[in-house]
Length: 314
Image (cartoon, rainbow, N blue to C red; front, side):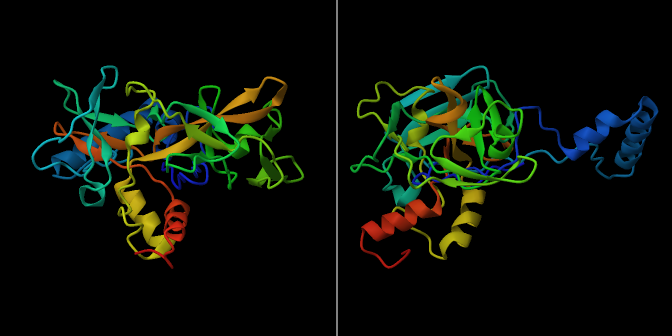
């Protein structure tokens, strides 16, 4: 299960059909539906396959092991280390390896001492993005502003401590009829078929990080993650298709919008802040720090190139 297409400049879009209830894979659903005799027969078949030198796959393959950029001489310019004892990981901020080392600081991950492996599923809220709030306009001085623009019924959002797709959040009977700043198209049964930003909405559409962030912690460390699919100069060439492919292979994180219920209009969900979220199932086995990438989105890089007066990616 993959989350994809997080866009720093357009609002943390994440395409995934994930609702508020537990999401099971096809293999997991099949196992749960089997009788005791069927499970025993399946286990016996697995043992026979192993005896013959084969591999028994009773459930889906394990998530890929993360293999991110690793500093050859250890972390340089270490700023902070944030231990996550309940997960078994350590997040660290130091000089980034992105852009040939010209991207400033970056976010790194490693296993905590005594931990051999950590596997986490897609859709896990990995860390907070930044301290800040929703504003009417983007910050003109920096590239950390995150716009609020949902463009697919499959886009995922956090709402009341659960991960939902837009379609499920706005489904009949859910208690939420509208998402602030957006227009929706519904079928005859009331199910959302499409969503797009409302160009006439006058509300706060941009999450702008505060100028003073205080000490880095699990609540604001996500902003330090760079996009590992693009060079600092503005792109690897090839446009959206190449960017998407590179981002899926290099970036572990995407930005997912957290929504909250409007206290004055309980049936309306409004934006509150983005959350740095795992884009896909992943296993960490590295004791040495590896840099974590976050998908900024092809629009971000296109607009950055336009701002520099470039015709396209370079």
